[in-house]
Length: 341
Image (cartoon, rainbow, N blue to C red; front, top):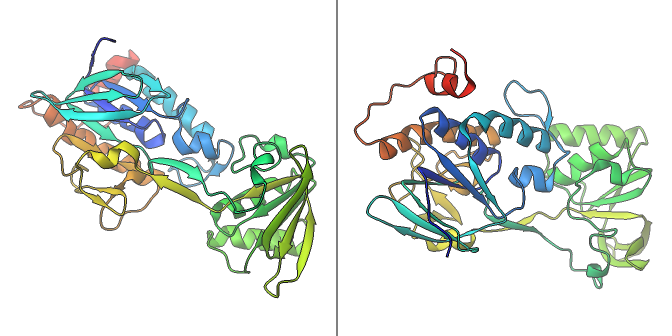
């Protein structure tokens, strides 16, 4: 049996908010181990849209999901976090001095603070109900785009009316031979700016837009040739394409977190907005996993939550020790780690 790892805090989730929590905790001298079920850092940013532009990070006009992940990893280097990728926290129990956690690979931790930064929990793309779709998946039907270059020179059919469908329509239009966007209606659930840009491309003849729903797939040996679609009047038409990108959303599951006795609201963890602590003292929840009045599912909101969480965590890790808030420009901890000041 492996030796129990003792640390100040265990962060569950290695996405942008989890990574920034490492930084904020490091500023108050709290050491961290990070556990994530994915095989690499970055969470949904790196797994679902590594090349997709992100526009709402303060001070950075545009950055990709992978670019943001790389920058955050560089930012936390001074605090020497330890990462455990490809593992899932299955067990959590309270001890005299804090918590004991165990992963699906029997890695054990003892810590004083637990930070749940697991995004929306485990997730998988919603699969269209089409006969034989599994024979085309990961060959010519994809639920995410890892490399834009893979779409160069191809006829790409994008199906959906949300942000992912619109964003990839805009991003792939300059690369693909042709982008065809199809939705069951001509109203969209995406950001208005994205809709306006898509309509401008349509007006200029740079993309196509179709009204309809998928009915059947045609192709050989995993290579899609065409998609048979249906209009509202039940008439059918075929769309010739090399690649199909169906964006019907994600199915989110909390997984083992749901069994930890935390106060939940619609599969999200309820927290207070002063400390972002859950109903269990010492367990915090930040990022998309949490819920509170006025919650916005934005990366920058998660960054704010991580900052307040770290202040409350200090009182648990160092009971009775007064914390004097420091700006990063005057942080003696950060200066020491960086070897400056």
